[in-house]
Image (cartoon, rainbow, N blue to C red):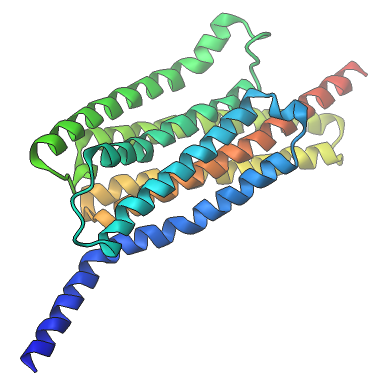
Amino acid sequence: MSESSEIQAIITEFVDATRPQYVLVIAVVPFCGCLLTLLAVLFAFSTPELRSLLVFKLNVIAILVALVTGILNGYLNGSSFLEPFAPETPLSICFTFALFALGSPLFYDSILLLRVLAFYPIRSTPLPLLAKVLAVPILVKCGRLVCLSLFLHGYYVSYATHGPVTDWFRNPFVTCEWALQVIDNTYSCGFFLYKLHAHDSKISKFRSGSTMVHLIRNIFLISCANFVFPVLFNIAQIVCITIERSYLTTILLLLINGYVSVIGVLGATILGRAQSYAAKEQGQLLGQ
């Protein structure tokens, strides 16, 4: 009877210890499947002209980065319950996962700057005006890059000296980077929504019942969704590491935030194309 209780206690302890890793693997798999489908759709319904654009190539790279992050997550967390007696995971793999998990949102948000550039084309916008528009997001992204670099350096040194670091997400550099990410997303998306609303008002003066007005308003609603969800996840991450300090909750929010950002980046392709069409339509209306 006592031997049976001991075995049951060991099994229960093992299940409790590996439950966070199991949840992380299961939670990420649907997002990876969704991204594979979106990647196939992106190529299937794109034209050769669209594939030659920079935004299309960046979207493809963003999807591949997210898929690599999912593979690394599956390997690191899946091996904990599939091979519980295996040696410790090499530092190179853990460092690569930290780099992809924390650095990929910075790459995704850089792509989203194309939303702002849709209103201020580089070739036709005066340099002083372009500098004023891009100064804040570029400075914030530089700050995020510095925080990320400092954290990764400390993470590498700590892992190499003391072994695996399980509470890496409590690092102040990570908190600072996430706070800057909130500012970054708020500025870029808020500025984009403001300019989109201004275009909606101008077009409404000409054709209040046209399909173009409905298109602009639909884009506005979609952009609101793309703005709200990443910012909410960013705030939830900061609250989690300062109050709850749960490894499972924090990493889960971090990974889901990355996949939500990728989906937002894919939406930016559609939004950018629709905005270009809307600008041409408005130019034709003003020329009449």
